Length: 359
Image (cartoon, rainbow, N blue to C red; front, top):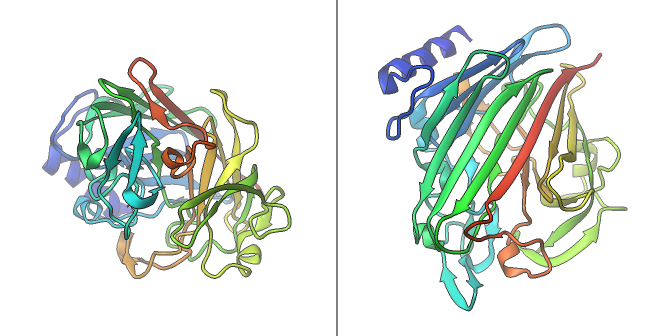
């Protein structure tokens, strides 16, 4: 931890020289939020969470998110570790969609499909630090990004804001807003942190217990593109309505989980429970709530020989992602909740992570 702290200090001084309350558009740095027993480090490259440290049931602290030792590694990152992904998170089939009679062809970056916004999505750009305050009862940072008309093929200029705030009782609040400036456009932002609440270097998450508050999933084809059908999880390996150990259910799958859950509670702007994760060894508990209609449960199936923090190598199932979101490929499925944002009607998306321990 001492080496990591030294590295972070060096990056702040050498890369950006940013001070509390400053706003810099083109330089990349590391920013700390700390409150009580929890500390979070973030970078304005991709508005990314680089570390989140909190104690276990014995009071021993650990970093519970996967990541890298240097900003350069984040710039070369392929699995979107810790970043905000967009303009449209998840997949768009055929890298195209039709809106108001116009066919828009996007940049394909996963075979013939578009994943997480295209070849250069929001995870691969420098965000402006609009506000940063690391003291007081609710330390926070606000990142903004202007996405230009035609970027990765998407229509219209879009102004995006993401805020991270530490609040009472070891809670991290994340709020997103996107304003279409001149044209309707699809927007679906997601936070893509890889969580291992036992510690980023503690091994796989197959022994973690998870509960997901979604009675249905959006069915997929062989390319992981939604078919448009929505199915019940009951009687399937996707049923986590009651807590289950991840590995016990995953044995029935060929690789692991990478599926969108339709969250119970319907649409609306109120927070509803999305998932609870429990690691018995450390005693840590992660509770996630959101106002989004869905959450992507992903067990980092594609991680392989990824050199992470302190030289630790991340392999498949080293972490899990819980990406609250609109439904994947909603632009091509009229029966899904719309992800189209029009001028004068901003996109808003909120999630709340609460951390605790139990014996």
